[in-house]
Length: 196
Image 1: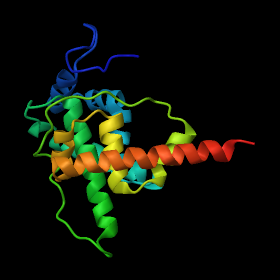
Image 2 (image 1 turned 135 degrees about the vertical axis):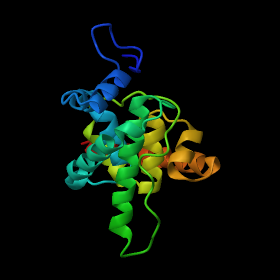
Image 3 (image 1 turned 90 degrees about the horizontal axis):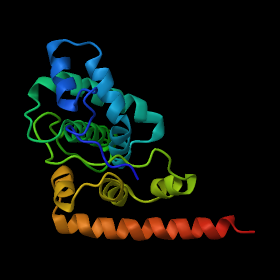
Image 4 (image 1 turned 30 degrees about the horizontal axis):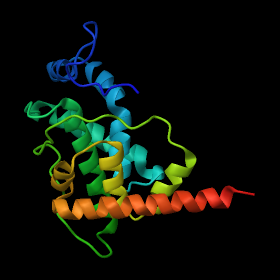
């Protein structure tokens, strides 16, 4: 299994994430493109974790990219660049899902995209997930899916997810445990359904 890549682990011939971000701020037209291509998978999974449907994913991702471009100069080096990008992607997706529900049963203020950062970098999930796992994730309620993806696939700690979702650590643990059970139950049922 390939180790996760952090800002300081690229080869000497590659620019680090921080170097690319600095070059983007300085006006390099290709630096941001390179940075986004490097971490697109992490961003997509963070957006999916917020419940964004596939039909809306491209638009939400584009909005996150625009926010990263707009907020680049506010990056404070308190976390890795990839963590900062994933946080913006996830919060953009949460804001989108909130807007979708405002006419119905919940209302909350938009989450700041530029101000808060998480402290560590995380591995990207596998590029290829089985169809069964993808369908299972889509089948479980959003509250549980968020924690399963953020904890189990993106590698965030309980405390980091607590900060990201603005809920107590105990709530994160409960949701993660319940989400894993629901996911396992769905996969077991799918396995039986596929048997002759």
